[in-house]
Length: 442
Image (tube, rainbow, N blue to C red; front, top):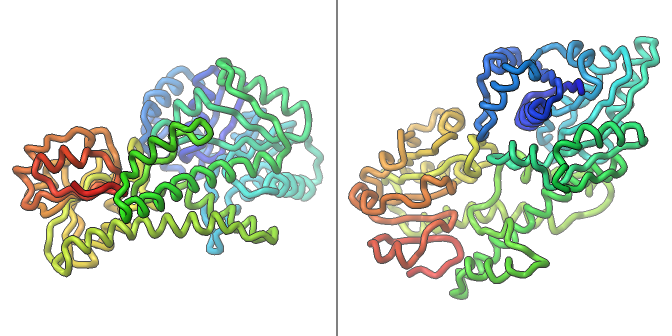
């Protein structure tokens, strides 16, 4: 099939490449000319495992191209995916200006039948707004070109997005006629050959499903983080509690790991957008308001523990930080807990020597102007003379470090583990003062 993808951010690039990988002819469009030129050379603007190789291979095979012309994109694809950003507006709602701008561009350029599919995460009713915008532009032109609208929410997890796209747990499409359902069923056939469900529903239910899924996962995380606070106070081990809960088939183990809170581009934004959608509909979604409050509090809890440990003596202390991205296997710093924690410590006078395998380039921009944030070349360099280590992102390279080397480098052998990576008893035996989340100190 001939496919156009408008918006070559995280979702658009991964989706476009995966559609090309199974044999489709894909044209990806973005208004950022510099990004387009880089992609044409096979240079990837984001870090995602396996993505660079797939981009280069499909460019070389002639199945994947890039353009900055929306007219060219509309002319190219029978199917046009809208994958532009929907940033959070000031009132918490999703800002649809980019989605509707694309819709206007399609209406100004469309010459023959097209299926316009909204893949961006959008509030209920957005597909109808896209349809109205395209129709309005056609009326201005005085032409009548047939088109259909569909919803196809993405469920990509950063760090494993290529696998999620190529081997999805489910594919959800919202349609309002059988012709579109049939075409999309054919498009996704290579991805659901192993039996993953292809779920067809109405437009509004499809739009809501993405928000509902992310809100539920965020709720599980915040529940477990608050459970960790209770465990700390009563002397229980939250990791044992988690395993006991997760063994219940009705609950399962996923998204129950306690830590310093969720971040990234999806959960915070989508939960806030669903809260706003509910408010606009006259319903107070109280659980989700508490989820966001719990997430914010969890970051402050670790900061409070660090401050309590050092008392009023943070001024001038060198603190090492391992991990800056909001999760491993990505360079994404959006709403990363590290930002708030590092800014809090440097505001107290500490000097943070930080390291992340992939996110340092993005972090430099975020901490620009903060002379108390020093970037290290590797995880051990930042430990030299440090009076404490804070683990904030669970990269694999941090899982089994050389603890003897760490002891020899650090001035004070203190570890604040925001991801519960290590065994408290073993760390104590190795001479570390170890503070983690929701577990008794040894």
